[in-house]
Image (cartoon, rainbow, N blue to C red; front, side):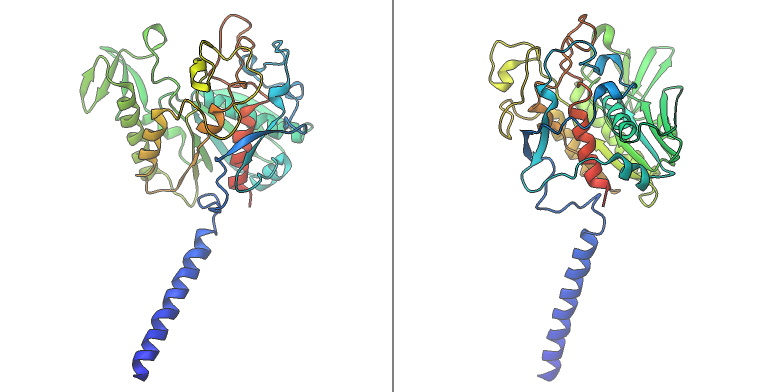
Length: 358
């Protein structure tokens, strides 16, 4: 009897120890395990006169296509919104704290022009927090490098619109869904933020490949979502094979949506984002989430190494007012895909900041 009581006590003790140990470890690294009561991506946009986080006139590095105020956008209300999660409040982005924490480190965005949107946002957030800090801006091949010299921090952008390779062969330009040789540039980086989707549906003259290759077989075309998924699995395998989690932290910038169909936000007949001056109210987008997001989450769930999804899709869907429209390309085009700076990508980086600052 005494033995049985003692044994039961021992089992209970071990169980409590395991639970405490698991709880301790689950919260030891908030990059991967933010508090369950605080889902940063469920919430709504609220007006806040203390936003934007910087004045675009004080950041000379914003590219023409993102600089809506300089390009003559007449309204400014779109700048005055803060993202408010349901279960918590985000820490306000602190550029000085960011630079001090990551002194001597390297950060690289890898992807398309939506990655460039976020990269330029982060550069502006950091530069405007310490405008007298010394910096150097260079470009080597497809990699843009902004170095904060006083902190020895490199904030980089590698333009890789599919993540997998596009190479020229005798047949023409080949999109290789099983090949990711470009990944050699990503090795040894302290923090990687990946992104792809924007280019997968491009066709005609805007399509930068002639054939798709999978497993040695060539195809003139295929379902683009299927191709996207295959490429993501190639990338996922690369992450598990080449990334040391003790050295490198990995994020994936979620699917950034466009606004070209007003029916999706209950304005039938509206065909662009031009003239949209406020977000969709509430927390749910009437048009629903894009199928690409489901594919992305499916692939991310298979990766053994820790990868944090910056799940910005829903919060961006609500921001039909945040695009350049005609104020990005000088009146020569309608851009309802990218985002004004200052603007929505600053919030992506504010959420990113809340994951990495402890």
